[in-house]
Length: 548
Image 1 (cartoon, one colour):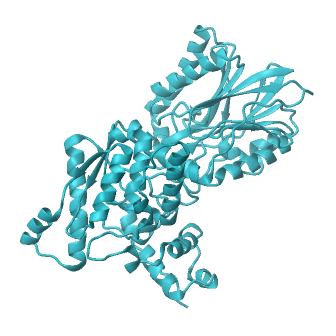
Image 2 (spheres, rainbow, N blue to C red):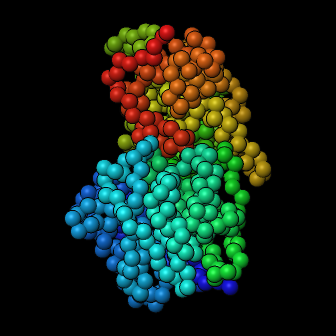
Image 3 (cartoon, rainbow, N blue to C red):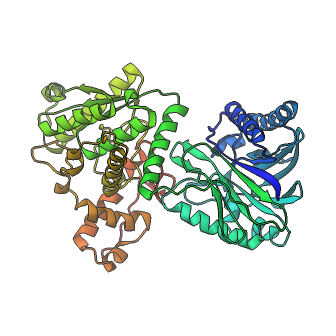
């Protein structure tokens, strides 16, 4: 016996687009009502987009969010959907003017309840305590004969608070509105947490999450429902729109099962996060096309494949910029890549530009190498200015960590960097996964095999390879993971058995490259700790790990 049909709306709003987000909510409500839903729940801050940062403090923005909520309620009632209970996240404001991260309940054309988020995250990428005031009261609403408890995201991650308040209250469903960013492996942690909270309140838990890209964050969706006993009852796929329907049974009736889909592999999820982050950065900022340098190497090849998957290969411009040191196989691999993904392939040799510059300001050594790299950046920005493409950078996390990139070159210049949070060794993994996916579909793999197998090289001098200056990437990434993501010091790294010379070399590279990282483009966060808001260190900093 069904007491209420619940619709969980996994949608992709845009920060600041209150009119567009309002239309999205209304369209989704109409679709849910047509499918017999009596309750529809949307993610955290869906009306405003999330995170809104200091927009929350603008009175004009606060008024627009409040007006949007009133518009949604009135429109649904006027269209004959007033019996649909709508629960959605928005920006609330107290009588004293303090902003809240708020959930509102709409029914019959009016706001019937409000709930303010209790626990405000202030770690990693979050700084909600400087923006929002914390709520204190629990919220339970009735849908038919069922009682639904409402909380928001971080409220279930902290012991105590609203979940503890709801324990023993006799609720039939715990509904969680979320704006939870993606990071690899986080889905497993979420579901185990949800199972614990469902057991605590003795009721099923419905978890509805945002999806889509917002600057350096990617929201993955993966909306789901678990039973009070931990049973997996329903879930939506990640990284796409979904309207997950689930029937809340009457008291004493067995739990119902809705749609259940398999989770994607870790490689697929990371790849789709990179695609989502790039696609939404392009679209939400009004771009239509992308330009990047294609060298024939693995980083630019994977970045170009991601770009083609994000916005279509016909909207990607790949520019090969060979120097006198560029190998013929690299040029051939760049051309092959663009042919595979259907990109606009262009060749712009830099040797004449280098010669003209050298005639005015002769340089040698590293300065001459960097001149070549920076001229490539100038070319890409020139094409961007002339034709309106977004320049994207193909640099990876290992290079960014060690400063192994020329500032303002083709690998670090531009508006977005899809691989910013992807280690070099993972770049190869994702390239192989993407090619295997294409092969399984009977399609041409997008990335040339030679780009995957050949030793990486900047090709700025004869015979150059990355390992001339860096440890092997397998070793380098292991040291970087410990030092950067787990904040282990020199003593801890030596205790792990790493060679002291390698440790000292890597730590020195990381510590002196902070200024470069500050100037690097945005890129999607896919690990537990990404450079940027996750890791905030001073540029001017004399601290070094003790050598003894």
